[in-house]
Length: 399
Ligand code: PMT
Image 1 (spheres, protein in one colour):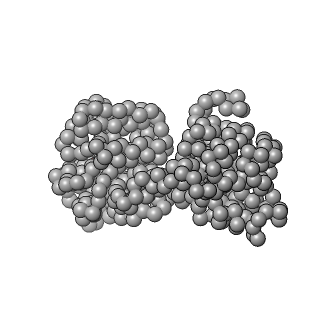
Image 2: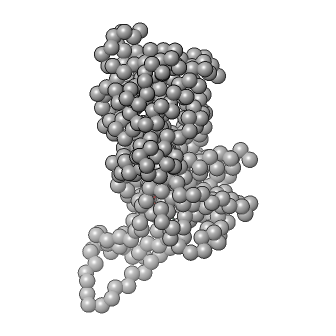
Image 3: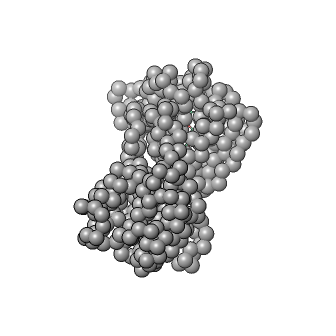
């Protein structure tokens, strides 16, 4: 492809800034109009003259420089952009973007543009792992900003860990993917996702629940929506922010979740059951708060409907994906669920592994397929796991 699309390359002040010269050069050589915008700090790491020479375009740094072609410089560039790629994206620009700040030329262009924005975070591992940085990245993802996760390795500050700028080739390929619309590969698909825990009432003040926070299900919803799917999210109570662009049904009990899923099923292409649905509920709900006595209390539990199993029985063209949260005999137990519920894919998490399962931002899963094969994934962020599950769904649909 080459119809003189404009790529705005935003460079911020990190040591990896020098590597971006290669990105600029590749884009220019492949016929793109490349507009480099640097922060003041970035100019300390690589000279604007280098980037001007490689892009064959004046480099923009100063918000109030009037030498450019546009009447209002930052708006003109924001409108002209077909994509804005920020590499390296420091913790600082990520925080400013998450707050909607526009206090220099680059952040103003990012706020003003309607073009897709792709960022490649790169920074010291501790800065990257800090909760505030992770929260900011999640906020940006939820708002549709595309993020290329940093790679692991030796960093300039002397430590080894996550925070390295991804290979320039990866950034270049993702840029082209976005420009060609390939990142919207779920367009036209409707995906039903369940997330979070259910709550099963005992009396007006007490209920039975579990430790699911909804993070895995919300990561799936966010990723599927970003890739163009229509996402129907049926969520148990959670403290998470609604993912951008998804339709949400909020429920409390397994029976409520089941009713909505059964109702929506005919209109969907894919179902992903990431919710931790309570298998049992109190048999008798007490309208009045139960009083304590000196005796032990026995609560009889009744079986809840199995949502996925019910959908598995009704399945026509739909792809069904289940999760299994196990503490022992992971693959054996998970495979039983795959078969019993008539699923196409089962994502098994080993709850005993650190960095897997409930509440954490990462997951370690094994994918189990109907043909008896399986695939182990390393510890990845829940967004990355979500991306791989969605890729796998597309492969199953295409096979
Ligand atoms: O929400 P997080 O804090 O991010 O944690 C993520 C997670 C660990 C909850 C998630 O990754 C996960 O494993 N979800 C499924 C947990 C679970 O309930 O597993 P299960 O083995 O009990 O159920 C198997 C499958 O059947 C699941 O897809 C479940 O959604 C579904 N199910 C279970 C019971 C039921 N009554 N109806 C169902 O549809």
